[in-house]
Image (cartoon, rainbow, N blue to C red; front, side):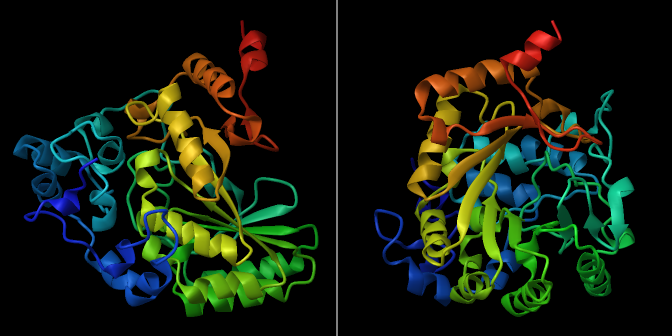
Length: 366
């Protein structure tokens, strides 16, 4: 596949961090340390016109995107753009980040808070939905604005997602001995720099009833330079069992630089899982899902969840109906070994866990 970076007039290679061994591992370590992930994030594409020019796409797509983005602007790192196919408006990576006119069409059943999280805040930035676990919104922003994001309208500042709010949340966690695990989310928790993240992990590490620390993050996929040696050390040095759940939806997202980032985390002893979202026009075929699982395993990542779309306003055009999702999942089970098949789930507000989707559930509604 030709990358955008191969075109002299388009995206330039971000740094030596994108130059890795052919197997996706070996030479990456020095490259990761050479790059400033903050600088790369600052240089991310924020204008639909520029994105379309980089990919050789017509101006009318850019005009549509600018009219449709509303309060959720386009944001995508250049390294992620470099994995897109030039001239292809249907590229599965592009579809995830380019605003389209369908976003502004109201759809029944879609809301700004599809998981009713604002009602589950127990302290500043602290969401409790499931027994024994608490989700800490550690950062308000992301490195990429995915158009299907269920928190695209979440009121972070009003919910205490700031430094003072983090202190309140940590105190609430320390006071609740029923908690075993803290899940750092956001936004994306890896937008915290290594020093700030290390400070937060240290505070959680000191809470005796905690045993596990989980991070839900897209940064290692869209900005793999974020996986620094210091980050690996922060996770490895904690007494808490570290679990990183990344978010990739298509095999094309997982280039050699991402594979190298995953190798660095795995070498530090971090458990690695992936959660994907089933998205129309992105990965809604057995072939695409199987390729994603295979590539994840190559990268030392276990396919964990395949989510049905959370019904957030602006994302209805990504929806895959449940019967089709079950058929795809059954096809996936026929193609792959069991450990390579993610669980097909939907999150239903108020339920004590994710709801597994399968033939038995379809039969119960027949």
